[in-house]
Structures are given as structure tokens and as C-alpha cells.
Length: 459
Image 1 (cartoon, rainbow, N blue to C red):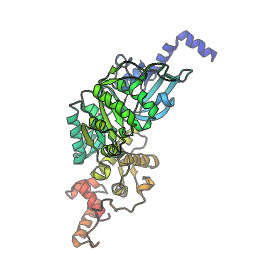
Image 2 (tube, rainbow, N blue to C red):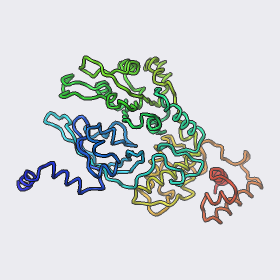
Image 3 (cartoon, helix red, strand yellow):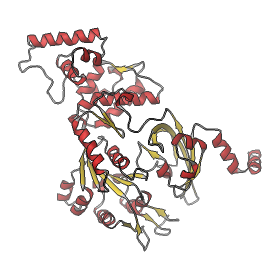
């Protein structure tokens, strides 16, 4: 070790570090200081993320490390180490690239975060942020919108509202059940707006203790409280010029709600311990799975803040109300997981797809994504089968649609027409080797219609 120390003294620690980063041209390596500002940006980072070092160094890391799938930063300061964590990142050209993340934080003797080294290793090619449907093997009637995918009118209406509201700076309140993609909606509002070049900062209000919330949102100055050894910008200042996403906003304590309302109205924040307010230019998008009018009636949420947040309300429908998207999302996730490897799936067995279509999806799109990731992890071969699915999808009998609209006739007897249709479906599947899309085309049906009829006849 003494020999290494002497060598590093002769070479110089900075030069040695820069040589090391140059030896890894396919990985993005960067260093942040205690304020999360970028202080080093490797040639690999320029290549992977598309930002030149001159554009990245000195900027808040959230402005150039724009993650598609994470919330507030990366948790490095809190957890100290990140090991082989999958993350998708937006590049400077708005394409996105799948990566695996490795990082290590450094703290001083008092435990204060003073910086960190982070490494992003690409696991696949960069993709356009709004991929054309055919790129993911999606039907032509499907819209892919900043990571949101749907062929249903209700969701495509949401997409149009996002486009319209993004022309303004109005506050948006996204309401939807857990797992419906509220953060993706918030990010889409940001990316469609004139603030797309600014930071997108997200925080889950339910994940922070009341004692930390004010400091996290508004920042603090040195000496404001025990452990505040230096000034720290809050999330509003970090999001200056961009968008702040307040997830689970209904969980904010009532005393914090009044302070948030003041910031929204005055566009000024006062860090904890500071005597002067600071101006911020932030667009706020909030989200909740609760009914804010019910929370107001119960005395848990301020009515004036509710109206201030929901200038434009956006309702994200649950997956059970847009069942036509199940097959679309399955194909979408198969394409995504194929990109990441190592397993490559060509398709899904008919019985497995029937199970997916019959499931009620209480966890919405997140549950479906997890089911597909599970299938990729436990299965083998180039087809997803019933045995690859999570056990909760196998507990209800196949063909038992949650909506009940795909059952046979009221007497439970198939008519002659039913039997004829059943044979036509069976014959088309046989002629097309079990390929649903081709069988549907042979009969002049859409895939969705073919699936409905197939489930009805128990095929």
C-alpha cells in the first residue's frame, strides 16, 4: 500500500483518476460535491448521456442526470452506496438509455455528505423518448407518450390534456390509484412544457418525516439546527427553472400545507434559519391516490391549498377500466426487458395471455410490469408460459373475467352460431400456428375482438 501511495503522489491523484475514467469509455463516470453539483464529468459520461463536460460541470446533478424511473435524486447521500441498480436515464437529446448504477458516497467526521462518485454502465442502446409504436411491436392504434402507453380513449384523452396544459405554467393535480403511473404523467407534463430543459425534481411527501419536510422542501442555512453544518438548497431551489413533483401530497402535515400555499402564491422560499426569502421559478405538479375533497371535509387538508394545486385536475384511470391496454402493455414490457437482456422472449403463450387478461390488476400498471419482470426472471426459453407467471395470477379460474361481460349466453348453452364461431376461431389459430394477430387478421377482426371471442369460447 505504501508503494501505491508513493506512486499516486508522483502521478497526482487527479491525473490518476482522470486516466481511470478514460480507460472506461463506455461507462458514464461523474463526481458530485456535498451540494450535489457536478465537479467531474468523464468522456464516457459525454458519450452515454450526451452532455459535454463544459455543460455538466458546475450544474446540479439532477439537471444532467435525468432519471426516468426514480424519484428524489438517487438516495446516495442517505444510503451511502448503490450497487448494480437498474435505472433508465434521459440523454441531452431526449433519447433514453437503460443503465446499471454503481455509486459510493463520502461523509466527513460529523457524518455530513461531502460528495460521491457515481458510475452508469449502459445495458442497451439509447431509444427515442417517444418511441414509434412499431419500434416496440405495438399495434398502430397505440400511442406511446413519454413512457406512457395506451390504445384506450380515456388515456389518450389524458395525453391530450397534458399537451394542452403544458403550454401554460398552471399547477396540475394528478389523481389515480397506486401504480397507475402518476409520476410518468408528471414527467410528461414537464417534458412537453417549455421547462423541459430545466430540472425535474420529485419527492414522495409520505416518505419524509414532518421534521425533515421543511428543510427538504425549502432548504436550510448553516447552524439552523443540530447537524446543519453548511447551507443547503431545498427542493424548490433545486427545481428552479423546472418542475417540482410532489407525490402523495395529501400526506403533508397541516402546518406544512400553509407554508406550501405561501410559496405557491408568492414564489418565495425562506430556508430554515434564514431571515430573507429567495425567489424561485418552479412549476408544481402534485399527485395523490386520495380524494382531496374528502380530505378537506375531514379537516386533514386545506381547502385553499387544494384549489391552488388542482388548477388543472388530471385523472389517471386504473388498469381494470382500460383492459384493452393489458395486451399492449405486455408487449411493451416484453420489448423493454428484451432490451435489457440476457433473456430474449419472442412471445407469450395463449393460456398465459388469457390469465393476464382475466386478472383484475389491483396494483395497476406497476403490478403488470412486476409480473412481466417476474416472468423474465424465473422463466426460460423464448416464450412466456403460464408457469412463468406469479402465483396470484393463477389462483382464479381462466376465463373468469372480472367485469363479467365475456361470459356465454344467459342459459349457459352455446347456440349453433356460437359453435360455428368457436370452430372458426379454432381453425384460424391452427392455420396460423397459434399466432393471435395473424388469426385475427384472417377472420377480419382486431386482436382485442379476437381475444374476447376466444375467452368467451374457452379456447
